[in-house]
Image 1 (cartoon, rainbow, N blue to C red):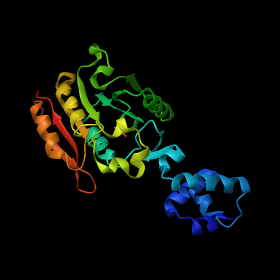
Image 2 (cartoon, rainbow, N blue to C red):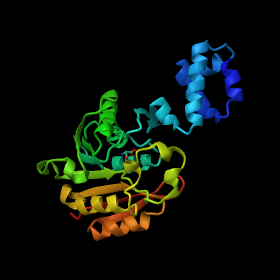
Image 3 (spheres, rainbow, N blue to C red):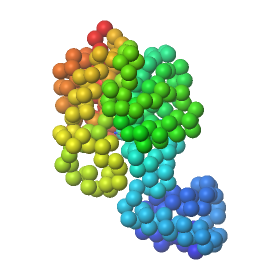
Length: 271
Ligand code: GLN
């Protein structure tokens, strides 16, 4: 079998088949094109068919490869972490806009660390803290920080309890992509979500409980004028703004994602 044969007969979408072929052969994208008529060594062909079978069984490509790109950088992912989504890049863009020079930012529920590591890479002057309740997720985040030489303070724990009280002050930014899917949302039973850690996806409640925890707790941990930024579901913008207002945050606004859905709500601590 050649790569050309494989790509012609596979039941997978071609972009997915190419990614799996790259993993099985160790080829770059360019080599994949130039070597597509050479017969594959039998063990490489067998490895490729095994990867294909995992994908046909529903396993996400990101978990099969152990990697997903975010904001132009490769990130290690494992079934202990959510798979990075392009929507989260809007949260990162907003954070980069509002992080002052030498600013302090706290990424709560960092998962694979995509937000914290990207901020640290884009802004080496910043002081970044990243926390998560899951030690397994935190290990992946630490691996990503090391791979990208990002200087980050990590700690394990639930929401604001992850840091000792004396470190919980004067943040210019608190950012989070919390679990925001409602417990009975049928999407949890579909596609990649079936394989992702449930605790990273849903609050097992109305989808807003983590956003409430973040909004209620943020003002005490923010510097004057500091901002809370939270990613949420496409239909949670109005509810998020209400929760932020009830927590006395000011200048509340919601940013859309590329599909035009309300995706990131932010609010500022009164000066
Ligand atoms: N912060 C990580 C991400 O954006 C993890 C978020 C989560 O697990 N809910 O992918």
